[in-house]
Image (tube, protein in one colour):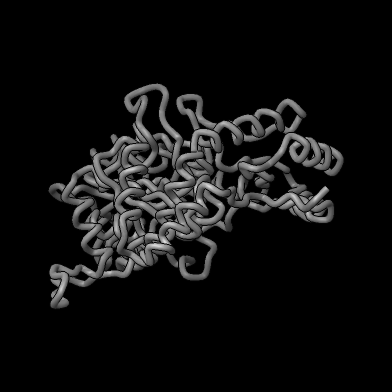
Length: 378
Ligand SMILES: Cc1ncc(COP(=O)(O)O)c(C=O)c1O
């Protein structure tokens, strides 16, 4: 059996044809027709009027946070259990994160979010301030971990009550949507004020590296596009009207993305089928929320106190796996930041192992991985 990686891209002749077209036309950089076309493909897919293509999910998060009005010395509420790139853009804006625990969905616990706002903060007019530090709390960044949906009904209600902007980190959840409740039919990333997606190499569709941001208001999308293209107002004389960023996705990458999106439904089907097959084979995986149709991006297995053993042993058998991210409040740049009642995240951190979930994983691969896990776990 060949090495079975954790999560790899799945690309073929269709993508190559589009990339060749970009190369043949010499449109390889941020100009060229595929960028706008890819924006339209994503906007249509997630049901938004517009989407802004950018260089990475991290860039998308930075653009959305700037657009949300996050300012120097603000506080921004973020999950403790997430990938590092959710949090760094808060610092790019000169603000600091406040870390909130997860619940059993692995996403931000709305009850603890409410408690933090109600008990640790106070409203002054229509702005929220943390009592202990006197600092303005301007936004909250829920993350849809592994493609599972955070409880956005509660989070949006809390954000409205405390005047917080909501930036959804939907880097991992392109394709996940609600099937019940207030947001039935809506896609992740589209129910907050802003949403950010990633097309990194391990995401459900990839452009090599890339991201996309969406905004509830068109002027937000227009402004993010402007800032992402060096804030240039004139095509000839290099006139720029504010600080700009080189954050635009390239035409080459967009070509790849368009090809990938044609396969999106099939990718989700495969991920769902393999997720179900693991369970049929006796590998109990963490569940996705019952009110959503997830994209099944990553599968999470709880290995208890055998996390490291399982990862090591799988590796010996040619199977890729990984632990969940180190908790944000334990990382050097953030050890001094406020971590509010972190209780569940360390437990999940100690136990979660992600197991192979690529969209080109075969039934035989799944059977091999399942047998190995059973054997190792005893
Ligand atoms: C939760 C989360 N946020 C942000 C990012 C950043 O995206 P990118 O790698 O495209 O910059 C990722 C993925 O890498 C992610 O998983």
